[in-house]
Each structure stands twice: as structure tokens, then as C-alpha cells.
Length: 385
Image (cartoon, helix red, strand yellow):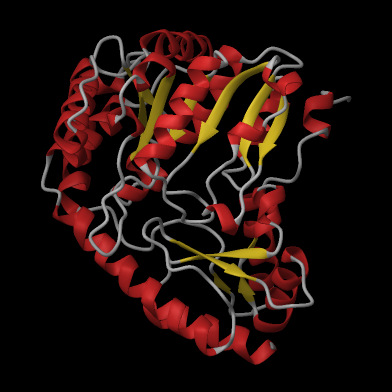
């Protein structure tokens, strides 16, 4: 049996590898603390669970769902965008239901990228921005990201010969893994750049609802002219502790939304309608949970920042996301330090280089872990140094 070359060319998927290492340790009876995966440890709010229970009792929801999302779900997404960002998106032509934003990211490649085409990808970013290109025969141009430029992807340094073959550009702020945030001026430059070079600009706003110290992450679609070139992805996963529910939506440029919908209608049959009903409750119901969760993550951020400072590991104070992006100690690269921490402290952290070339020299620490386990994990790391 011969698999496709595209499978052979894929790097091991980071989070699958983290799960594998964790299970191997646990099989030996070892207590492992995982700070590697951003999966909220808090449950989905009761009102959302109850809405799902009610929705599953409706026989109409047991049939095939709409390929593009139930009209009532798309309406709720449109209303949420208006209320949250004062952004108008047409529910019929500018909103598309997704089976989680990861699915939308992977499928947008099939809608726009032909073999040999380039996608401009942040030098530190969600791995699917790169692997999605591999799966459709595309190429990746890594946009440099450095601490000196506040981890803002440098799209303007892209060579002309790459831009001539480029179709798409990904951005994501607040950024996973660096937790960096973007300014309105940066978004305006990105929009102008995409227009100039005929690129689809995709903003992955998965952490739109997690901000600290009074910061509320914006939408790219708030900026003038954004809908001319851009779509934005929003997810219920981190915002409402619904990672396992697999529900999200894309909004923005109608031509891009139509193209992505065409791919999806030929590949999947849409999100389970009952899950969409639960997501409607998440988007339109009480939003107290959003602020409560941000408070929890901010408290954990402060715990981690203080503990890292006490052991001499440098990290920027995040303004959003559920991650701390920390420098590895001198004498280590990302993989070596992550391996040391796993083997000697039984703590899993994500090596920065797994997110792209600009991630070398860093590790990502997830805050989706109870306070006491976070403190214990940092203490274990301290004892290995």
C-alpha cells in the first residue's frame, strides 16, 4: 500500500505528538502535568449544555444539516458581530458555519491554492496554516516575527518572486503561540498589502474573547476596506469552553465565503444542527462567562509570570490568549529544553520551533490548567535548572 506524497511530507502534528508523549508517561504510572495544549479545563457553561440537550430532542435536528449553517445560526453570528464589534456582515452571503475553525483553515486552501502557489504564513503560528498548504501542493513563505517587532508578522519583506505566486496570507492576533496583539495601524497596512498583491487575507481570531488588563481584542473587519480582501474566523472553542463541540464560523468577503462554502459542500455535510443551536445560546445568551474566564486566565498568567521571574526565565506579559511565550534558558534550543522538562520534571511544554522558524528559542506554556497544578509545574521546572 502506497500513501500519497503529501502525507509523507507532513511533519508530525504537534498536538498529536504531545498527546502521545503524555500517554506514554502516564502508562508508566508517572504524574504528568501538561502545559502543552490549549484545551480549557473549565466546563462548558450550563445554559449552553441545556440548550444542546433541548436541541437534541428536536427530531428535525436529526436530519442532514444545512451545508452552510442553519439560517438561525448565521443570523446569530451576524448579530454577534454587530453587537461585539459593530461590524455588519450579511448572514446569507458573508457568514459560513464551520466545524471548528481548524476545519475552515484547512479547507480554505482547497478553495484558493493550486499546486505551487504560495501562502504567506506567520513565522510563529497555528500549524495548520502550513500543513494545509502541504496537503494541496502549495508552498509556505514564512513571514519573520521577532520580539523586536512585537511579533508582528513582517509581510512587507516578502520577495517579489514569492508575491507573484502568492494567493493567501494568514494573520492571527491575539497570536497563538506568542500572545502578541496587533495595532489598528498594522491591520490597515495588512489590508492595503493584500489589495496591492491580490491576496486573500485570513484573520484567525480564535482568541477574540480572551483579553487581560481591560484589553478587548478587536476584529480585523472593523478596519476600512477589510471586507474587500479578508475573511475572519471566530470560534466558540476558547470563548465558551466548547473545544470538543467543534463549532465556529467564517465572516467577511462574500466571494471568499462562497468559495469556501463550495469546497465544504463537496467534502462535509455541515455542523450538527443541535450544536449550532447550542452555539446560538453561547453567542446570544449571557456573556458573563467570557469575562469570568478572562479573569481566571489573567490570574493564572500572573502566577506563571511571577514564578518564571523567580527562576530567571524571561517572558513578555500577555494581553490576551491562554498562553505565556517564554524564552528558553541559555544553552538550549526549544526542542532540547522541552525534552529536558518532560524527561526530568514530567511537565509538557510546547517547543516554539514547532510553530514555525521564528519560534526557535521559545516555549509555549498553556494557562488551561488549574492554579495549583500550574504552580507545581513551574516548581518542577525550577528543580531541573
